[in-house]
Image (cartoon, helix red, strand yellow):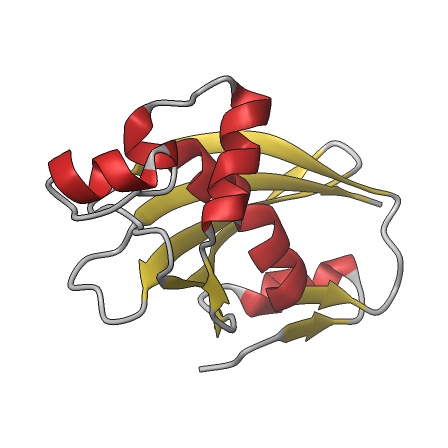
Length: 154
């Protein structure tokens, strides 16, 4: 298991299918959750009201937004995958599926397992399907699982 996949050229992706990379942990802070609530307009108490969540939430505290978890895929991917040769452009093409099997508790440490599932040719480049699993340290189930489609243009 690697903690970084270094690719020299875009064509090296073809040889990286089935490679898995595991990132370092980062703390899901209340500050990050609050900032996401502000920019997304989702200030539901289960995310932002620490005292109420402590009293009333089935999780015993605040939890990260599911869409914040999805947004965290990008910085985890930057940590995990690097090209030594600059690419013309990288485009987020979308997600085929996203699930949130368990909550990500604020204060927990989260990391990503990123596996290249598939490569296909597209006009001007390649499309990669990345299987991404976000997990909290010590959690029985992942916080988020997603199939992320990324287009890499030459």
